[in-house]
Length: 388
Image (cartoon, rainbow, N blue to C red):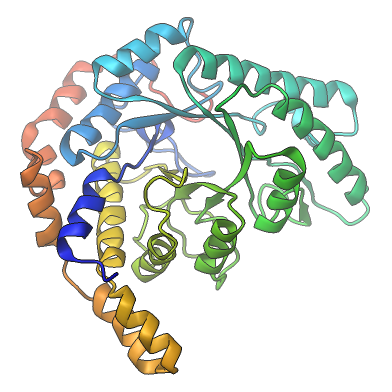
């Protein structure tokens, strides 16, 4: 059935996008992190900043946490603070890349004691999940090698499989493991989970509660990401997205900033598979804002995802299927391009106004004076950032 404007509005009204707590701290580059006035000083203030994004966009009701960056004494209190702000705790992200013991690996390390330390860290993350009501444990494995012969590649996979199985056994009913991949960095000869296939192989071995998370910045230049999206949806194992943007490497830039057409193509596969809603795919941002202001950067990111989604929803699916069946190459392509070239900003403005929101979230936040207020009030203490 052809998607109509009204059904597009209905789907957009139900779309949600999860925000990363670390987007509201000082972070974003391996070379220099530039501090900014008013940056959050603790997880409570990070949630307050995320709530501002939700206030003006209306579609960002969850916030991912990163452990140990977001350690607090009482996670029940933190979850209650989130609820008071109108948001909730989303995925819990583990950290396997900031401990000296992990220099040669964490879950894949040859030393059982180091592997045990990394596994125990995930037990801590599951405790946070239980305390906050989170259902997703997100694991990005930075392990790998820099030199041929440095370690036995197969042995590392065997150790990884064993470590993941122990973590998987910690999950309660209704919980999921989201297993991320990255083709290079921090290691440059071989990453232990370099691609979606390796992640999928481990997920299939673990069980139904293990799914792949796709970071749009974690691919080689020229990779057809929408093909990967299609295959993971086909296998029923696409658990989540980490939306950002890249040009050369994992740049953590605002989603859609470098290649908005790629973002549209990805969302087109999501919509075509009827996976935008109710398919247990968590749409998340994974970005750091180093030179741009943080709350506005997240608002712009949410708006970019909404615009790409709206365009994908406006594709005439019946006409496209007919063109594809008849071999009308240019006609089929034109149908996609017609949707992509549609100015959907008026459509989204209509959606926001109908929800009691300003039609332009970015401009509304700029007028609010909130940025100036937190710059005045958040003086003293240590601003949150890498490792905090």
